[in-house]
Amino acid sequence: MGAKAIATCVVIAAIISIAATNRASAQEARALGVPVAPIALIGEVAPGVARARVRVTSSERGLVLYRVTREVRAWEPPEDGDFERVCDAPCDLDVAPGAHRLTLGRRDDAPDPSYRELDIAQPAELELRYDDRGDARTAGWITLGVGLDVGSLVFVGAMMAGEDGNLATSLVVTGTIVMSVGVLVGMSLACLGDASDLRVRF
Image 1: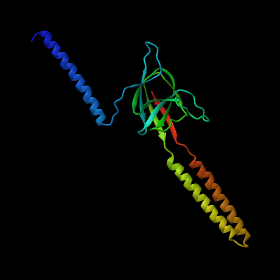
Image 2 (image 1 turned 180 degrees about the vertical axis):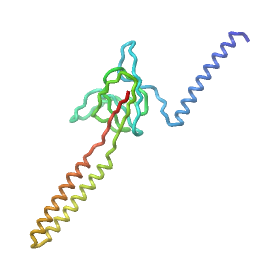
Image 3 (image 1 turned 135 degrees about the vertical axis):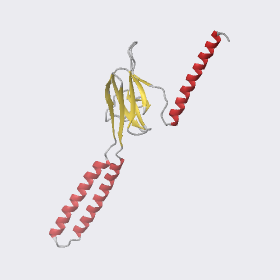
Image 4 (image 1 turned 180 degrees about the horizontal axis):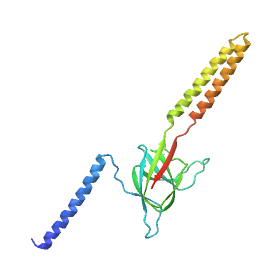
């Protein structure tokens, strides 16, 4: 076998080895639950301008990063096209230097219309944080129900107080306070929305 044939065999063997290594690494990553996905791009860059690599992490599974394409007011219903799905965390981004309006969503839920405008010009880590306040809302409805029930029982006691005017008055005041506190606290918690946040570290 000539020298050229030997060199050709060495090159082919090296290519096969590299391909096998890459495939094994991808298979190992999938086995470990690490997503193997293409790097998403945000924004346009002029020729010769380098993008900034951003690593996106999250406080829980199922969080999705969105780019806001149109400013949505609080009183406006969002429309299709207002948000562009970028990637599911964890993921990597190549971002054009400059300001970007970003928000997040949870799984297939609608993204949060309140966004953050982040100025990114260097490699960074972007953490998606989501605070599910479902337990607080449940506690609010329970507080509301208990307040109304207890207040109603106190009012019944006031009506049964008979000729004891002082006792009846005291029970009416107590029932009113109990019901008012139950309604105020209960509705405040029951109407509490979930919270989301984007934290960037350079």
